[in-house]
Length: 365
Image (cartoon, rainbow, N blue to C red; front, side, top):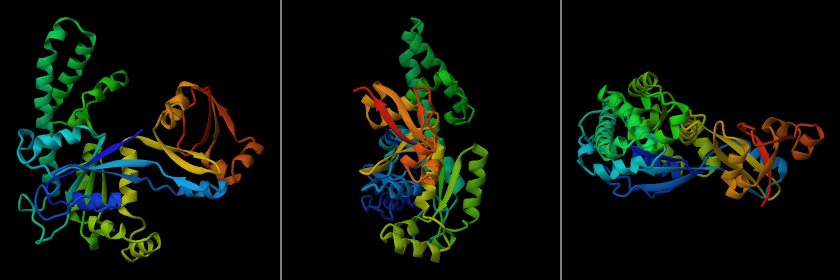
């Protein structure tokens, strides 16, 4: 199960620099001019999780395989993108394919780095992007409603459902609210997601500050945090430049560098953790002498569907799962200790997997 986060923002706010750091590559060209990212760069990053190393140490696992998230570096949007300005149409399509949006906002002052609007105002930048996404959604909805009209007149149930949801979204957008502000009923969630509205995607504001402001942020990042709180969104503070430097160091050097900068952890960890919360995700583990591996699922996932993340056959032939809570696995020094203490549980098809569960699935081939 892949989860894709699109990194968006105005030109020259640090998107590609952040992408380079996140993916530990130099695949995205970071340059001081608009549209340096012509094709969306896609990279996968391992999700840092200290629990995985601890489990591997207990089980003597030969290999450690973290779960992964995908990041897409999407070129800078500009005012008028919804009408095709800049490279708008192409990049709006790239955003549509993502599960969530990490909106990078320039919260640093630097006369050597050009701002497309000639000023530094992250809240206004956020509003510029949001407006373009809302306008694009409105245009898309109006076209879809026209296309559905014949089926709606014919009483097609699926078309009627789509029309109702699209009308709800259009009403919110016309009222100046993004589609994510709508409280969608549980039974409509699948159809709602299929609409792929740009403003329905959860959003994380990434405040890119100067290197000497990475620990506490600044007035710009405080304004963004207030805006995010009002929207029910999330925000994190990073220095993309620091993250890029860290990405070139080995783990020991990176730790020393972070300590010198007064930071407790890399910005990558904060972005990933915020992204997990944003997408309502959690992790379970499979552990053995061959490998210790982390798997990503949505909160509320039942055991058969969790098994299906490993392989479809596991879900189709699911019988039961042998389950040990992470804390029990660690406290009792592994699987055998948990068994002996009666802490290994046998769970069936209705079991809702918990974050940190160590699972072994039994299934019919």
